[in-house]
Image (cartoon, rainbow, N blue to C red; front, side, top):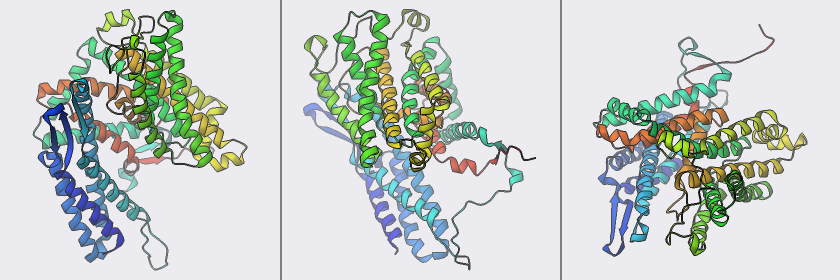
Length: 512
């Protein structure tokens, strides 16, 4: 057995063990701990089945040497589905855990189990090994010229023509359609009426002015955090620290609002935004400096920063002055001067809609202008494409990386302030990383990091989240929305698959 097959075999065994371990658990004070084992769910059984099939395929690849590419592709598909299932389960559990952990003062807490983490990690290992094998495996054709794996070629006459400039628009649209379609298929597999479910989802989202207001309320922080991710991505920086930067902005803004409650509202709102931007920018500065001067991985550093901000932030909240605290875990609400809520919006929509959406739209215009029309934006895009060439051209790649991360963190910090002061009016001890951080990343990926596209992607995600409770009318668990969201992001990330089914028209000037 080759090393590749051996690693796949070991990872698949671990993946097969994962459903028999705890995927999530709840601790009820002194009453004990109650765990949720993966094999008790349909998802766990699917992963177990796929793991067994993968183990068999790993053995077959040793004997069927002429079918290795086909076997690799089959294992790649199985591991991809396992990853999607693990992520869907994790997102679903995360929502439940957030609700359970709100009862922490009563001695109730919840956490994700080792089984779910093991399932995701082992599936990622198998996926990485097979993808690397498919893309880099060499096979001579008699002239010692390596041939890469390629999907079957479809004749151009059967493919729709898409001008190259429209590809960034077409791919998210197609991905959204495929994600909704895949969600419907999974609903049907589990015996639910998908059409009825989607009907109730959109009926709930747009059936009342209150829910429309909630959609716009949801969009505010999502847009701001997605813009932060987009700016960093343009500079070639994969910022996974969005939750930590948003939380830093949230805590700082609420602290300022509680410390200076009598500042006039016309000054208070801009000042809380500024304080949140500074806090988020400082958290973004740290991984930027480490990447620029030490070459560290921004992914690892920003993930660690999320935990540092989470636990340090919780201690800061617990040690706020007593006059700021409603109880040991949360603060009192901010003064009316600091609130992002406007009475006419509240009366009009009967929802929690606030000025956050307007702050977000202003940020969209500013970021679009910076990226498209300024020297700084050109430098950010250039460094993202090729930092060495940028240095050779006289640009400072290090300065640009640091600056882009500060801007990214600042935008996330403002997003956290909008979520905190706009929606909750206070700050409280967090059980885990902010969900809006990762949701903002999903919005940016769906929009291909386009500032304008982010608005539409945030509207879609806001619609799905607001309409999800309506699916219960069709006896469908609202967590299926997480399946749709994860499926859309999967197809966006695998955009090269969609590109295989469209013919991109190159724009050539001066050529008839």
